Image: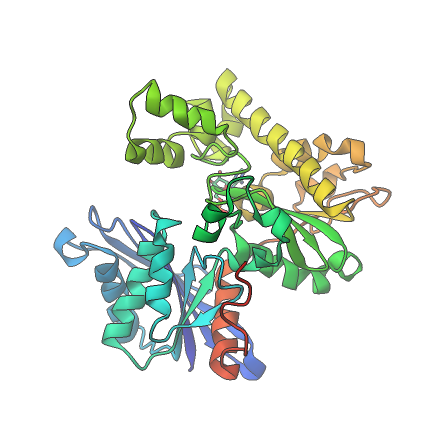
Length: 404
Ligand code: AMP
């Protein structure tokens, strides 16, 4: 059985999935797993297609001190016990910089180019690249593909891509990149099957998970995103504040004496729903809570989604459909109802029963704008890209398509 391994490596965990390649290039998920607690309490967990447990075992900290160590242990388990010998590996890489507008086959030079973007995503990029490097050194013949969270947004106009700062900084890479691109690309590819009548029109997709952003799509392409230079911007998230006046950062530096590292930690880990509620970053806990601040956090989340949707409607010069996706968007009927209420002014009406059932179409037949719930699948998107590059090789202008 030919398989593709998909790897999503972070600082404390390496998530992986195995897809088998079936007839006509169809992909079927076989295994889902992760090495978690890297450098603290390492544990390998994995399950099969129906959620049947395949592994759940702890490792001594010395066996899994870092991301390459985790990749080594997970790889050995896959090879020795599952008899999985993938024909290629697809990696989620957060940043493709201004250059990469699509996935790229890893070859000599690509890794060092991607390392340059580590300054743009210091918390993620080095961890994303670590397993690529370790697989490259142990299995140099195994094809690897890097799939970027920024790539789908490289269709933005120059006007949307710029901050109002001197050009020198823009050419150094200080731009509005946008993230969650693999999720948006998956939705963009799914819409022609799910809702062909709106797939080519003006659509806002709300990826509401522990990270949250929205994307304005026209004709299946991204024209605007709520996220910018980093994944801190835009909507409030589980632990990130979303849009923040840069003056707040200056205040933290000058009045609180916080270092850049402390501020970074604060902005990525202590803000958002967690900071505002003082309770949790998990929407389920906030929805179940009676606390005033939990309610305030939810109200703020919904309000900011409404404000940002207005901005994206302006970018699209109108709206033809709205799509919810990711953990909160797919599972919380309550948040969806609140968000839809925010755009009542656009002529959107919710079908409460369909919403409660998590149906695909949750707006009423008479709603001016249809509202959909579409589960995302970033790993399948990565597996598809990997297979496509494996079969067809890189397209002619796969690299450096647009550098301006
Ligand atoms: P993701 O990052 O897409 O995996 O989304 C994770 C987030 O989705 C969690 O932190 C929860 O806040 C949220 N979530 C998952 N299931 C539910 C649910 N049934 N109701 C509300 N929120 C949920």
